[in-house]
Image (tube, rainbow, N blue to C red; front, side):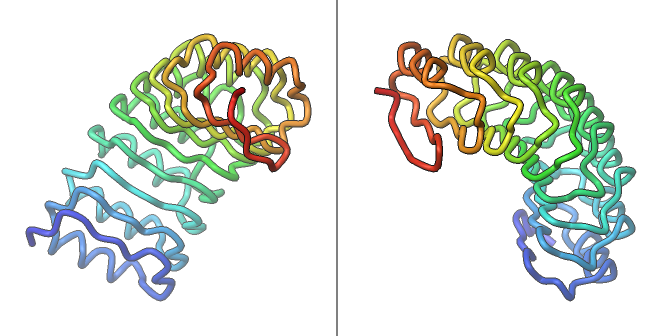
Length: 224
């Protein structure tokens, strides 16, 4: 009953029944990894939220039976969340649910939205305004996002240390320059697959953040 951290990632046979049992028996759990639990549905997640009020870290990567409504419930029931991963959670992670997380979880320091191809700029605008303590943000393969998302992140999240824009094909030099100008703590920037970013953008990054480690064109380089 005093368990604080639990990972059942990749336990694809674990169902809502098992997760409900965890919720009932381990109400003090703070960090929970349910990634790739393909049998988990909203019912199991909602049971967790009802019982585990101390949650600060939640990973739901590739939980494809989790819906938007359940992720919205996370935002409402877990205001102390510091870390959340919704990578590949394509049914649950939507523009609406990310906006709700931004409103309900202001203390977030890390969020992974990798592979949410339908995510719109509005979600990231809201996230950048609502979660200004962010230090680790992954938007890899969020292919609908434009420069406007990255510019807002640069303006509103000055504490960023890691940022992944891999595969964000709409991102241009303007976004890179804004991030470099405002995010002075940035140590890692992934621009692989950002084909509209040119050497001019990389040069600006190198000038403003010489210690930032940049990944570009599938090659790892240091800024200068």
